[in-house]
Amino acid sequence: MGLVVGMKVYVLDSSSLMYGINLSVMCEDAEVWITYSILEEVKDKHQRELVEALILSGRVKVKEVPKSYMKVVDEVSMRVGEYGSLSDTDRELIALAMYAKNEGLKPVVYTDDYSIQNVLSYLGLEYSHFGTEGIKETWIWEFYCPACKRTFKFPTEDGLCPICGTKLKRYRKKL
Image (cartoon, rainbow, N blue to C red):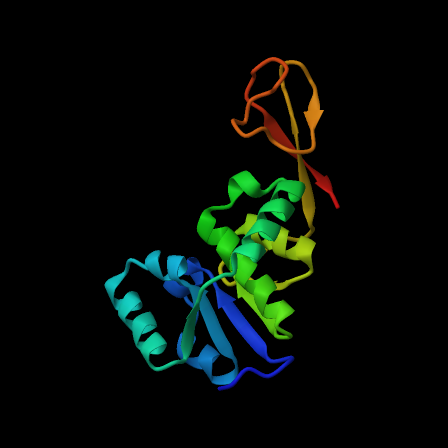
């Protein structure tokens, strides 16, 4: 199947590969994309063999994410307050969806991860969930020090208050 502008592309996280997504059916009406790190997270032998067979047949594509998209995801996830909640693989997944959209495709990300869903929602990217209810609203997380009561838009690199050294906590604000 060649890529056509406006074509739907399913971008899958590792949990969707491991729990309940019927890849054979999904591959019939759209391309399915994953990253190498997502493939590496599939540990179940049977499921891994199925995914690898679909890759060999060309029905699932393993894509590398351009670094420029990773930078944007890092900036946005910091702005939303989700950076510390996302793994490198999570950020790659979001970046891959952004890349697909920039290529004129219609990505739909399959994930049950609320932090991923929150960033996708903030970016206006479509997602679907399969084992949870999914998020109901987009939130921006802010950070505060429970000791000195100061608030911060972004967490510090070490997660500690720059004023008094207490571990920062986060609270959510509706977008």
